[in-house]
Image (cartoon, rainbow, N blue to C red; front, side, top):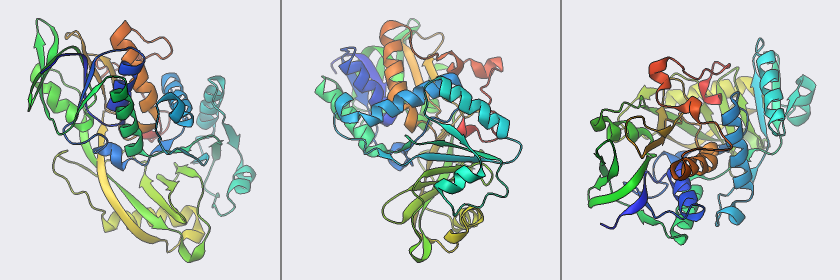
Amino acid sequence: MPGADVIVVGGGCTGASAAFWLASRHRQRVVLIERRQVGSGPTSYTSGIVRMHYSLDPLIRMALRGLAVFEHFDDIVGGTADFRRTGFLMLVPPGQEETLAANVRLQQRLGVQTALLDHDGVKALEPRLRLDDVGAAAFEPLSGYADGHATATAFAAAARRHGGQIMEGTAAVRVVTENGRVAGVETASGRVDAGAVLVAAGPWTRDLLAPLGIDVPIRATRHQVALLEAPGGAPPFGMVFVDLSTGVYTRPDVDTQFLVGSVEESPEEEVSPDAFNEGLDFAFVERMAARLEHRIPPFAGAAVRRGFASLYDVTPDWQPVLGEIPGVRGLFVAAGFSGHGFKLSPAVGEALAELITSGGVEAIDLEPFRLSRFAEGALIHSPYAHGIVG
């Protein structure tokens, strides 16, 4: 097969983003290899939440850059990510008020439009919320959600317009190395040679790199999302909403429908990424409905319209592995996003493209996300009990 400058393995939002930036800005000959279709993996099931609320500087910077790309997607990339601005509201339980305030101050210093709210401020946004067991809240007016499949396919299409090659229905069998550096990727259709390889294969990343003696500690875990409809003609809950007191998040959908999921760290179950139950469990629906009713009493009796289960690629600290793999020159990883990578994907792809082509990243410090942090005991610890929030 013809060679390339860079091979990207994985056609989700992160891999497609990297392929776009490599081809468009850095003029690299890029081959994107996807085992099924672009955007067909966990990306196609993402809730698509776009928010900047993190507690680590580089995560905030990446999320803020991601928002800028989503806001101007047609101008920057071409096509649509179907970004919808709704605002983002987060509630924390008593005892976490200062943690929330410190994070909001950090976000504001980095340019995020966000503010602390007291109970009266929350009630002004949404009077139906029960707040007796809420300590404080933060609100981002510019946040919202976008469509994962639309985002990934638009990035891939733009990469192709800039000369990139998209190989769908092609499984990456192994990463080929020679004399301590990358030489290409062996696929089910033959070998593709390249001087650099970025593995952005989500929950399949660990198995792909294991034959090289590289352990990327990613577990594939099953996580569910339910689509509910507000009862009795109740007005929809129009914001993206995270409630750390109950461990529930919601996101608007069409008409009076909305998505409900969990932000709790305990995975529902560890699974094989190639064989797992993709349906919705009744027990999960009952649990989420009860927590939702506690926080929004008028939503008691919300009807279940449908639901699904998808995969998270979870690391021990719920934060991604980003950067070059020590000992194998030209081998890079962007995986392990643990369910919160979609909003970061425009910036992660941009940063990895810069790293691959120039050897460094100017605007964002990727060092905290190095693979060696797990062996060094330098895990990234969120001040919240829910690592997915960051």
